[in-house]
Image (cartoon, rainbow, N blue to C red; front, side, top):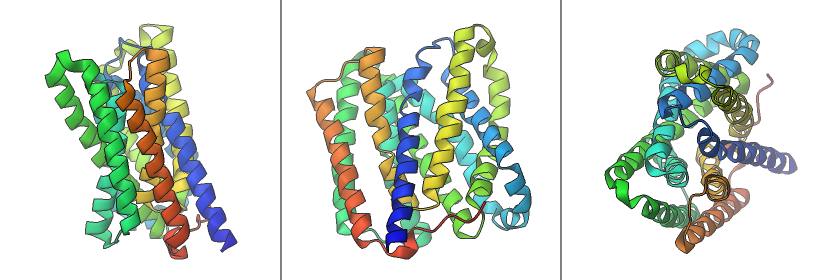
Length: 311
């Protein structure tokens, strides 16, 4: 029991650290306004994904037979990894940093639960549904508050919301596919490295077509390096460690802290204004995290959080 609790705690901390790092990406992107959202997404997830594959190369080679046996999960995951950053950063460009992040990350737990329910037959408790309802309420309040600051660009905001939902779906999909590979015996480092490496390769043509502004100034280059190394590379290493120990639906729910960090940074550093209902939405998101985490610690069977396979 103590070992199970320790595994859950390590998994929760890993995902939480990753979410905090990811929450800085939207603000960081504003320091390189010449970079379009496709270039930002391609350099962040593309280079970051290839770095993950590089450090996991020995594990990937060692696990190549198992990876090949799970190739359909690898294909789904790689495609989702490639689509996610393009939709995510475009959503923030059109709907605002806070709203784009909230919609993208806040919708992921719902999509994750739907995927696990449809494909894995996993049932969620009433307490989880209560937490999800609280989270959705917080997401709605924060989205409305942030969208109110962009009334003049109503059409762009709608496009941003749709792109955010696409980002949430692909985020949930690659979380699920990576965890399925781990459940089928693939080591954590190999599963994450192969998934993100393949996704990074898919993003290279996008980077070549859109990444010229990265070389236009040191500031643009610095933002690109930060995005690739810190939130994408280090962040996803932490996320992979967490995903090996807790279910994908719980992991994506914990990452609801990302939009909270993004909203705070958008207000403090970018100058976006957040009205009272926006702060109320942040409070509900934090409450959602508390409710859902409490549920898993009390009732989740020990088999739900798998120990990490030796790397």
